[in-house]
Length: 266
Image (cartoon, rainbow, N blue to C red; front, side):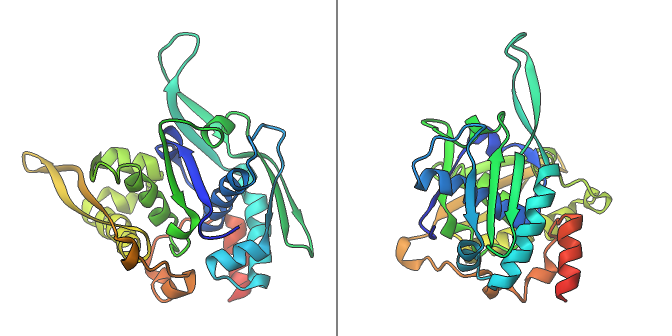
């Protein structure tokens, strides 16, 4: 698996509401890229195999640390849920589908191998897509060290051909499941989430983005994003180690097991 490996997601999954820790997010992206690279049409019974050595190489993480991070993510990922907007097949009314990411996950000790099975409801959103999808390479996001930056990147990359996107504040908070009381203040949400994420995106990915506040009278109701794709010759994809000094300033949501693991590494 390399930086050129392609991640493809249904647009409904890009706009789903969920929270994943950084390692969990990376693991899911690698799983999607693995299936596509190996030309496998995923089913609920497919076992996706991921290796710590690939994780280490992609994200610039020491191999021993990769073992610990993948072990923790393998456990915590089984408890993560997501909400996808859709239409109820019986009534044809708007509905919200609630699903787990994986039904099973195995971490093989001393080998650095993870095996996961995607939840049956999730499979159509990550496999055999021919329309209404967003795609990018793993290399486009491997330098990002904030899960908010990763989610923001996908939401912007979805519209990179259009060059602009308006997202209401409530919608963006729903996408990110960003409901901390401190983020009720716009200035806090803007500086700690949006601006912090865009700082990484602009420096480390294949796009740049700036925004203007969308106002209804004097009230700010959303963000008008302007998105540009960087010329290929000017793209510099940096490893996670390049952002090591900045990571402490970014609001990264991590699981309890990841938090415990990180304490052991300090």
